[in-house]
Image (cartoon, rainbow, N blue to C red; front, side, top):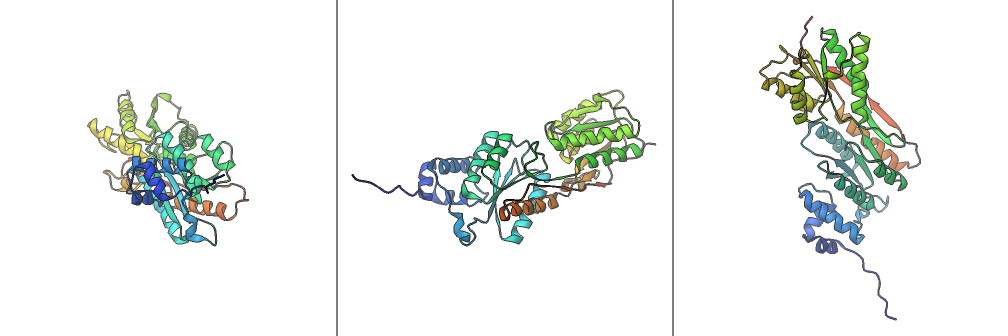
Length: 340
């Protein structure tokens, strides 16, 4: 009987199957970002279907590691994400690791394909900076004993490495700052309701109101989902109330910037007519006009700590998962004024 050895799948096979050049496949598998997302996805799908696993281990045969870390993000046009990525990159450079970046553009099917591709030998571990990671993905990563870290989000099962910040305390501090300046009719532009960080910020807001004997008014809550455009709509609604709020606490800086735009569109002034406070302290916060008072999250540090936690898992896989929570800080600028 004539037998043939199984064919070793090569990068050329992946190129042929995906209909792109060898060089494009190489760029995708080596993590270069100047490739169209549709092309990247097509290459990863072909690699998965063919059973191709990039031999990145050749970089470090002694340790059997690819020395590459995967990072999953929803988008890049976001100061919050960019600052965390900066910290991640700084930390990886120091330890001689490369970064493979995957952008989902909030598409869940891309998240699923990327998670599968990443865990198929392309990287040594995964950093997840996407909101609402499905429990099924987390379960898959745990079943494979694949190192991963959740950034600024929770895990109800309590079985994940996590880095986040004091979201409740930060929101409490922001609200207390407004209350101490005489504001009592304070509106809140909320984030993504399902996210633990969003819920914690809302609860911190409520706790400060309660401490100062200010009744909670649900009509002053408007959903902004952490997006500037939706925050414009939310703020437009809040400004239509009679009486309108004297201050708005936006649950992230992008929402605060959206709120500021809505106030301008209404021909009102900040902070003379209405005060605005944010959360994150992204770079835009200090260069907008007026400069935004906000709660600073140590975003770069969060990125560096995420890398530390991931490398900890890679080097000592038997350790129990742990959570690192970093302190937030009130940053007073020009968008809030005293009214009493």
